[in-house]
Structure formats: C-alpha cells, structure tokens
Amino acid sequence: MNEIKASMAGNMWKIVVAVGDKVEAGEDVAILESMKMEIPISAEQPGTVKEIKVNEGDFINEGDVILTIE
Amino acid sequence: MIKKILIANRGEIAARIIRTCKKMQIATVAVYSEADKDAPYIHMADESYLLGPPPVKDSYLHVDKILDIATTTQADAIHPGYGFMSENSTFAKKCEEKEIIFIGPTAKILEQMGDKITARNVMQDAGLPIIPGTTEVIVNTDEAIKKAKEIGYPIMLKASLGGGGIGMQIVQDEAELMKVFMNHSKRAETFFGDGSMFIERVLENARHIEIQLLADTYGNVIHLFERDCSIQRRNQKVVEEAPAIFVSEKTRLKMGELAVRAAREIGYTNAGTIEFLVDEQENFYFLEMNTRIQVEHPITEEITGIDIIEEQIRIASGKPLTYKQEEIQKQGHAIEARIYAEDPETFFPSPGTITHYEEPSGDHIRLEAAVKNNSQVTPFYDPMIAKLIVYGKTRNEAIRRMQQALEAYKVEGIKTNIPLLIHIMNNATFNTGNISTHFINEQF
Image 1 (tube, rainbow over the protein chains, first blue to last red):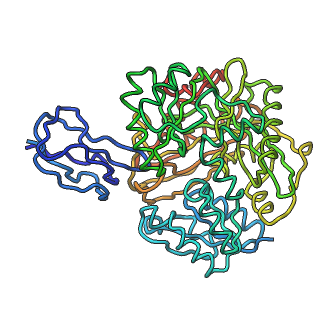
Image 2 (tube, each protein chain N blue to C red):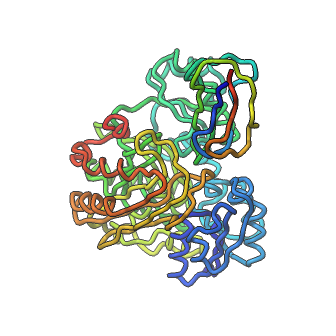
Image 3 (cartoon, each protein chain N blue to C red):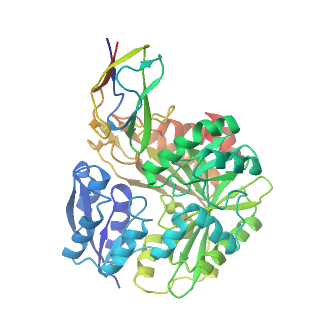
C-alpha cells in the first residue's frame, strides 16, 4: 500500500479521483491550494485508489496522508 | 479631513498605510486574523481588532465584521490596500451606506473596471487602443474555438473577472484550447464566482508598462509617469522599475496623456493605474485598469518624491490634488524586487517559520516587510513577504545597489526567491534592458 502525502500545508481544493479509480504513476490525484497557488499532488506509483482520507475544503498540514493506493 | 482610518488589509501594505497616517496625524485601526496575530503591523496601529480564523472569508473578506469594527471604533474611512476588498464594489457601496469613506474610486468604476470585458469596451470608448480580441463573454468551448479562429493563434485566454494572473493562459492551437477551456472556466468560477472567459491576441515580445494616475473629485487628473513591470512569473510581477527608459520618451508621454484623458473621460477618482502592453514597434494597448494602490507604487514615489498614500487620503477627504501636471518631476531610477516565500526554481510556495532574519540597510534602500525574526509564513495568503526598493542616479547604479541589498538580505527557515532575484540583477539581458514579459521563462 502506498500513502500519498501533502507536500506542503494548504487547503484541499479538489480531489480528482474516487475510490476504485486506477491511476498511473505521475497522474494528478488531488489539488492543494497554498498561498493562492494550486499545487497538484500526483501518484508516485500506479495502482487503485483504496481510501480517501480528507475532504475537499479541509485544511491539511505538510505530511498529512491524502489518500492511499494499492 | 479624515481623522481615523481602518486598514482593511494585512502585511506590508497595512504597515505602509499606517506609516503615512502617522505622518498625517491620522489615527489608525488595524484588523487581523488569528494567523497574523503576531504580525508587525498590528503593533504599529493605535488600535487593533481580531477578525476571526485564518481563512479569508472569515477574516479579511468578512465584510460585516470589518464594517462593524469601523462603526464601533468610529473610523471615518477605510483604506482597503490592494487585493482583498480593494476592488469590491459591493464593499464600497456598503461603506457608503454606513457613511464611511472608502479610500478609492466609486463603486460604479470598481464594477466597470473589475469586469475585464466591460473595461476593454469602456476604455476603447475613452480613446485607448485595445488588444484585438472578443468584446463579449465566452461561456463554452465551441464559442471559444470559433472566436479563436477569427483572432488567430496563439491566443491569450482570460477570466472576465480575473486578476493577479489567475485564470490566464496562452493557448497555441485548437487542440489545446479544447483541452483547457472548461478547466479555466471552472477555476474562474471557483476563484471569482463567474466562469465567463474572453480571448485576446498574444503580443510577442511585449513589455508591461503602466501609468500611475491621481484624480481628485473636481475633475483634475494627473499622471506620475510610468513603471516597467515586464519581469514576471506565472503572470505576476517580480521586478518593477521606473522610469521605463527602454521605451522612447515620446511614446511614454503619449501613453501618459492618453491615460489621463481616459481617466477623466470615465470620471475616475483617487489613485489608479492603467496597464499597457507595448510591442517592439512601440504600439501600445490597454491591458487593464487597477482601481487601487499597487504593490509597486514605491518606485514611483522614489523618482517623484510624492507620497501616493497621502494623496489618496487627501483625495478621499475631498481635497483637490496637491500638484499640477507640470509640477511633477522625475529624477533618477528606482527598482523594486518582490520577495516571495517560494522555491526560486519551481515557484512553488514555501510556508514555514523564519528562523533567522536580517534586513539590508543603507542609503537609498527601502524595505517594506511583513515579517520579522520567528515570523510564521502561513499558507493562507499571498506569498509576498516583503518588497525591496532601491534608488540610484542611474539604472546601473540602482541595479548595483539592488544586488548588494539582496546579498545582505538573510531569510532562513523558508525558501525565498532571493537567489532568483540576484540572478536577474546579474543577468546580461536584464542589464541591457532587452526584456519582455517572457524574460523569466526564457532566461531561467
């Protein structure tokens, strides 16, 4: 299982995948908003989205797990 | 004369406004969010009040709360600074209803210039050349494709209510437009509450030149010359300078005259800036009007000796302009570098705690900072933590002074763009002045 973590603190602007979606390595899974800029968060490895741990609009800290991939 | 001003903003601009208020013996009220509770500007004000939690909708965009504080503290005016409420016509109207002076133009002007398509049409009627493009809003991909074909690729796709470089993209061809149109439209909807877009032709190798205006409520309008703001990243300014010596004096005077005439024509009041794109043949085109004080106003202050914030307050108090056009003189050269909390290569933001902080100082060095040692740079607001302004008798002298000041400026614990700014000052192309808005993309 692979955890995808936030690279910096910010507001979870958009989660672009759903549980069960297949993702490729490098594919964007979520978009974080920090300092008025959108930061794409991408999957490091291919897999299937197993669990989404945050909601859109949540404030998240650097290192928080956004979702897990299997 | 205004006696007490509430500053509906934060950071360096709040500090800047308070400084002029003190000089004019005007009392000040600062407001802040929980994220800014230790910010230096709060202690500079005579009174300060907590607005609420960090998100802007609960703090700096919380209209009712800000107006309540203004009423309770008996402030007779609100200075909105830049960003946040500064171009919000609803806010300006509410101030008027409460008989609080909004330091800026009228709500009607804010509305006209805030909608970029209306602004294009109004300014064309007021005699300014505009970039060839659409005159009506575009709401779907099919329409966008049709219009783009008429205008010719590459095109610039923009959000009608956009600003600050958000919702803007150069599009090379139809395939790319099909891919990105709805994305940008949705983003504009999220950021500005309206997904309407428009299209302009792309001007190659253009400079961004803007005219600083002052207009009183008696129909007097003057300009304080121009600024060259071509050095940008993500369509946001990074380095600005005044005067714009690489455009001929003749063209610059013409731009100043036309800008003054257009501002008078639309009934503009207070400080404002008309932005132009200028191509290699020195054709110039209206880009947009900023109906507020701008981040880069200090470089104009440095070359003219005029305190623009003071003029804003005087105009809002109903006083006539202090100066006539022929009394405005410029001397020397000023450069501003915006210090951003961001990675100097990827431009990704870098929130965190400043662990070591040392400011540059010396003759003709002016620093407008929002931070100090141990300051928290939070992810909630814009990444600009300070502005470094230098003055020199010549452009070369100003560049050298900026190099030295940047080298002496120590900000540790977070990443900043200071290394990039040093590279820019050392860059041969920058030094020759042969720059366009693509400079950073092309050189770094």
